[in-house]
Image (cartoon, rainbow, N blue to C red; front, side, top):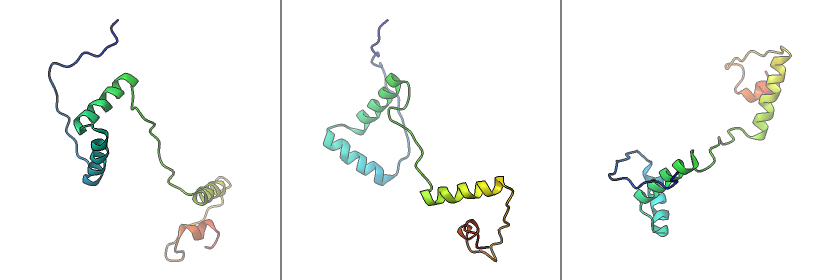
Length: 103
């Protein structure tokens, strides 16, 4: 079995939209590395192929602070104990007020 990838006899176009600021910053880095955007995209695709997946870790950022996570956990505990609070925006200005018991 030959593990080498055959060089294509013809090329295909890849077209995408990208934020102009990110594009400019990335192309500045590529220029310093001596790599064209086309070469970088080809390298990326090749890495996808040989790694059989995205060649870097994909993860979701933390959307909540530790304090917010604590408040959500507290609210879940209240719900599990059937301690419901009705939210009336005309009487309370924030979810924090409810979670802190200021309703």
